[in-house]
Image (cartoon, rainbow, N blue to C red):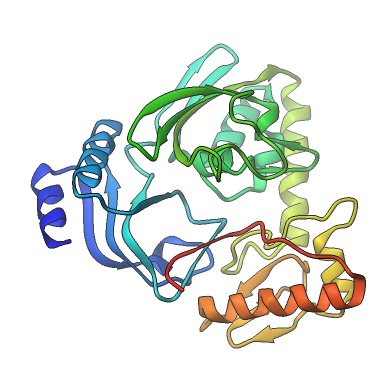
Length: 302
């Protein structure tokens, strides 16, 4: 790994660190170190990074703002590439916008609601990046990314780059083609918005934001929704009906505001969170014969 780190540093592709704690880069504030942590300063430097990773045959994965991610206490083998500054550009052409993977989804929704463009109101309280949102088809309040995406620029695992249309992304509930069928990362996305009444759009966005503040613990370290909703049931309601709100293992606790959120009370570990997830799954199945599946992405050495 030393040789790889030295080569990347010599190329001045951006931040390159060894054994960087991923707790510093996830909203849950847990997670062990990445062997190599890379934050490229531009798309060109990301492409250079991928050439080095391919040359040395290193395992890798990309992260955005770490809002839907649970990293094990043992960390992640190989390289972790953070898509942040340098990959957060924005271009506007009428009602069509192109945003870099590192652009904040909340900032995007705020900016365009003020311009009187509709389509991103649902995203006003989703604390992730554009890349992560497209990757997992993030959604809320009856809408999601698939409703507004025209195409996405993808870096595939073999190092190739390609634009995929919304249809080619094969979106479904909180998932896309990139998670299993064709592993890759989103570098940029083109969204189609629609002209609307500015006051109505801003009001709808504010209502969505207020709802999240009142019902979800985003003021505490958490990873967003832990479980997928087993529709027509809702995971949070099932957890509540199972009497698990407030239940804790170590420093991980099921939020008293919303049953589908686990918060880090300060000294929580990934192991605490994983044990709590397992307890919830077993309890809900025992009481209601419903198998809950995780929405949060669980990664790292185990």
